[in-house]
Length: 386
Ligand code: NAD
Image (cartoon, rainbow, N blue to C red; front, side):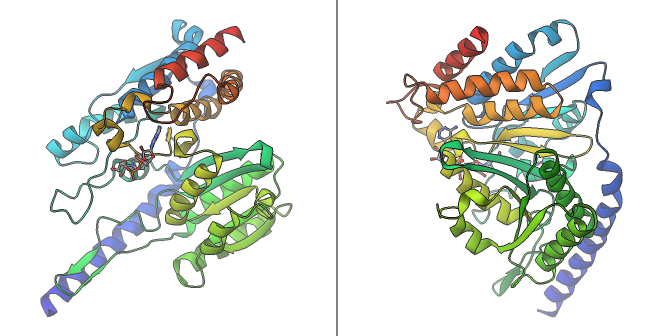
């Protein structure tokens, strides 16, 4: 037992030192890119696993159509990156194989299909989630998820901290076999300030006032307590026009399904795990995870994806072609906006709205509904008649 405690303590010291080093690199990595000044914008595309290749195929076709002129003029390149598959990751024993990571780092932005993460505790090799690794490697600190239900007055934007909390050391907890296991949660001052700033800048630029800081600071006193305090201090110092509210995650989960109150919320800023859970709840309110896109934004890099996973059961049941691509096509729209192609993004958003209203499309995710290809064909037809 003493030996186990000694090893665990030594491991904890290593982790603390690594985390302090990480905060030192944060400032450098947080500087934004001026996309307008680039000779050529390179958009990488990684298919991922399960339904990933099916939905990415359509999302890429949409980008190629919308950016055809820029691609022809050599101003944009859409570059396929192979190898971010479960088979390759397992074979290489790495969440992101080195050559894949190097190829991704040569792009400016990335469109990524969902990637499967092998479950822990099954005896299989415990590979870290490719997403968690990518967010860390590319320092994609802000996970931005818009959710809108216009007929109910819902227009929410979630700013989920993306690189810390329970995730940064999620695969590196300590265990005293047969007795206990212990995971770690990390909240840094710089990490909290930059996610709060990103949320507040968005609020300011988009005329939003209400910002909900969502934590469990009554229980997680050190980490969430710091998060809530730094969010407040930054707003008091630099964003006095914003109306900040502190909420606990449990009651916020209830608020989102309470029609009497939910439409008053505008912007949410929250640590990683709560953001992960509550944005899926919010996506469900919008019409399911198949409808929601998400941006993972850092300074140098940005990655865009669907909020859902690889839906392995759809592949096992032979219904992968019925996957709804709206989620990843929404990610296309977010990517276009992020790099400054607002006109193409508006065109895409308008075509997506027409698809939502189009009764001939029925995205059930099953054989009784429309296919992924049918959705994309319809969408491209709406884009071309615009
Ligand atoms: P999931 O999101 O893959 O599936 C949840 C449910 O939603 C399933 O019923 C599925 O059939 C359905 N669904 C998902 N996408 C759909 C779409 N486009 N159209 C229609 N229906 C859709 O969640 P899960 O089963 O918990 O996870 C499967 C795998 O994906 C896991 O290995 C998980 O780790 C991984 N995952 C990856 C990401 C990512 O890469 N961003 C996100 C979440 C989960």
